[in-house]
Image (cartoon, rainbow, N blue to C red; front, side, top):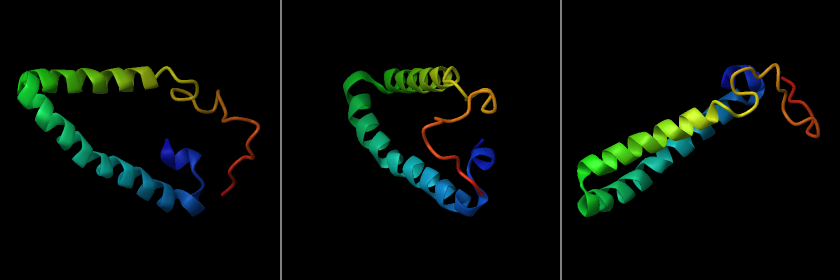
Length: 83
């Protein structure tokens, strides 16, 4: 979806930002998961993380435009991105 919605002239920057944010959250996850595993156990943390991840992905599927971006265009108050 990223390649179809982002203009080619800025696709590299947007993809780099996507990777940067994703990878920068990994140390945060480790900093939270370690103490949580000590407190409640590894299995509980893994189950909670899996359920949280699945819930976020599943909920994201119901946002307008995710399943069919052509049917729900972006906010019309913003100017369209042109490539």
